Figure 1 (cartoon, rainbow, N blue to C red):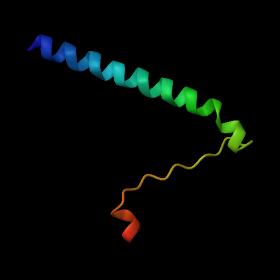
Figure 2 (cartoon, one colour):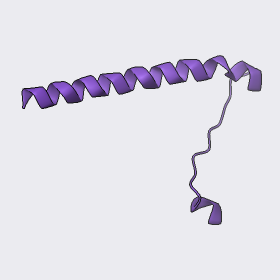
Figure 3 (cartoon, one colour):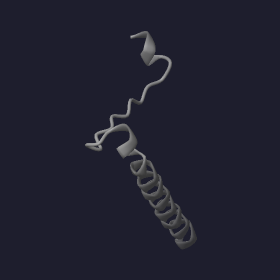
Figure 4 (cartoon, one colour):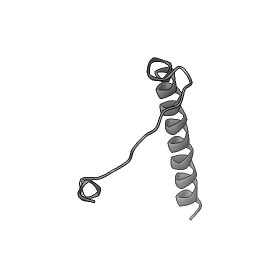
Length: 51
């Protein structure tokens, strides 16, 4: 049981690190698109396009 929890904690920490890294890399490009660093992301799927 301890091994499973340790693995989950490690995976969670790795996901957090990857998310922070992605955010940091993405924000470096924001100035090109918006001097005020205001970026809107639209998350959709093909089924949403029909609405």
